[in-house]
Length: 182
Image (tube, helix red, strand yellow):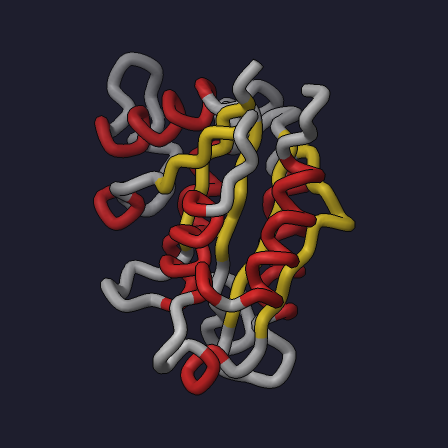
């Protein structure tokens, strides 16, 4: 059985190191797992209950909810913006948490990883993402962690998919998110 993992990347920048970490996850996915990077977070309007109306949900938000509904689990890849989670990722979590108690994220296994320039690799943002997604109803895999520091220099000439420490860490996270016996 194939385990379907949807990846949400918290950086919209074309050359994002976190986007490249997501690409590394796709490249090194276990045979029994299919990892897809979700495209379209930039088009989702900021969450507003006034526009989250059954039958009239904005199409980009409805598309995200449907993609998450089809997935067996989520991989969130987060940079750190000013010590916390990027707005685009938080907004996605907010949309996925609704309707309250039955949102698309409810009960889904979720792992959070990332890289940042600082010496802690964005752990504050990743902790905030875990907190937010857990409150939203996701089943956070607390032990599935990968924080890579020094992204600007570390990945200046090497893609994360070619960094042995990143690959080893990714495989450990993916093993927890998409176990072979699932």
